[in-house]
Amino acid sequence: MNQSMIQEVFYLSKEEILMGMFSHIFKPRDKPKDKALSSQYTFLMGNSSAGKTVNERTAMQITAVHACVRVISETIASLPLHLYRYGEKGNKEKATDHPLYFLLHDEPNPEMTSFVFRETLMTHLLLWGNAYAQIIRNGKGEVVALYPLMPNRMKVERDENGQLYYEYSKTVDERGSSKEITYVLLPKDVLHIPGLGFDGLVGYSPIAMAKNAIGLALATEEFGSKFFANGATPSGILEHPGTIKDPQKVRDAWMSQFGGSKNSNKVAVLEEGMKYTQISINPSEAQFLETRKFQIDEIARIFRVPPHMIGDLDKSSFSNIEQQSLEFVMYTLDPWVIRFESSLAKALFNFNEKRELFFKFNVDGLLRGDYSSRMSGYATGIQNGFMSPNDVRRLENMDLIPTELGGDDYYCNGNFLPLRLAGAYAQAKLNDSSNDLDSDKEIEKKEETQSENKEVLEVDKRITKRTK
Image (cartoon, rainbow, N blue to C red; front, side, top):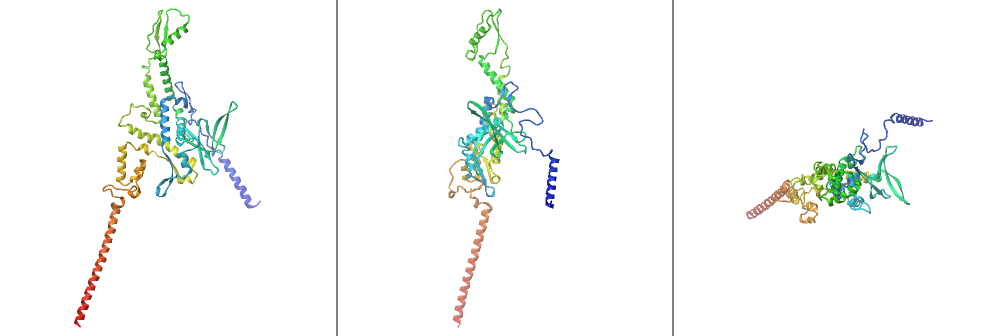
């Protein structure tokens, strides 16, 4: 055994010893869990404290939940999504020549538009807390399609080496019997947009986290429905002084005449000394309507949506409704937009593209305000030289002014001079011009002096000649 072989065996043995010493420390991370740390409480959908079953579908039957999910998902889907490339000196330009531009801006797959695709993913995020899409690549590794995946069928797991992988369950009908097939997907094949969570890998469902508030809304809605189904008259007791041979027949006769909303406000005629006694709590005493209105605010609070955007105008006025709309963009939409942008870049770009490209949602249209405010802002931008007329026309989707007519010129406040003729720049030009004038004058003086000298010489020559 030579010296190199001895050293190799030594180093291998040393490595094995070190791995044995620290194997109890460097273990793979735990798999993502839908559970709070140091607690056995699991954030799952199910029965609420009000006794109602809450899941993503029953929650969408609540008009406030449906309105919140719709206003956020449709707004995100309607925002222009562009792929940009970093240019020189911090500039940016649209990377329309890149395949991902068409994929995200127009058509992520042959079955969906970009609007429908983003609306679907945003709905999944709001209901399940996670959004998944399968990434289809060609032989070169380029992304050619994106297909949404149902979050309730997806599981995020770790292998023995600590690497993440995704398990997607799909039910397939075969000859009248359903069979569940599980597919294993690598992280490079999945676009995963997680919501708020505790481990940074899996998001928690807002519906599951607030199932008691939503369950109370379901319970009050059911109570109101049954209240009106019973003729807007709560249940009570029919008392008879004697013995009734067939109580069911009497009950059915009463319900057929006075039950249901169509029989409300009818006058009841009681025979044989019968007496009706109401035993339920009056809805006004139970503050039924106040509870229903409070649950609208509660659900709007869950999704961070201003109440006026889901039809509750009690606390809105002309003076604050515009400010609430701006806050909706800044504090509600912006976090979701950033989640989308960062997840798209992480999943779809290779290492080199991450340094050159980036996705950007354009929210400027939502922040523009009314017409007079926009025009005032544009005027300020043009007068102070940081916007050109064509910059404004691009924001307003108007045809551009030709460059030769000054559409791309920048102006400054004052006499509305072009930037190249104003301030220190223009002064330097004037100084250069004055220097040129001075030099021209000196040349003229020299020429005059030379001509005068010539005249003097000519006179001297003539005098000398006459003397001779």
